[in-house]
Length: 93
Image 1 (cartoon, rainbow, N blue to C red):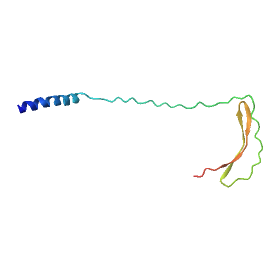
Image 2 (cartoon, rainbow, N blue to C red):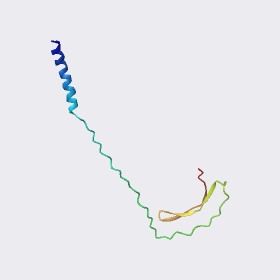
Image 3 (spheres, rainbow, N blue to C red):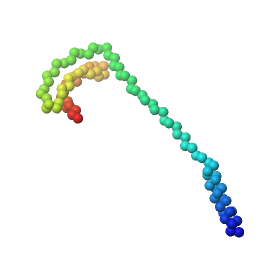
């Protein structure tokens, strides 16, 4: 009787274990495509000719850690505007 109870009690557990072994789960991983985009070149078309650079008087440098950045013309809404030169701090590593 004990043997029969043991066999009958373990049979459902064995069935569950074997059922679990028969089923395999696979994880499907789909790689995300890498999309690289580059910004298009900005082309500014203007019918006006850029003016000649202005002559600037360079003030004394604040210290030897500064470099002079010359002024330049910048096109804003179809009109050239002068951006004056200035002293800019050097990048020191």
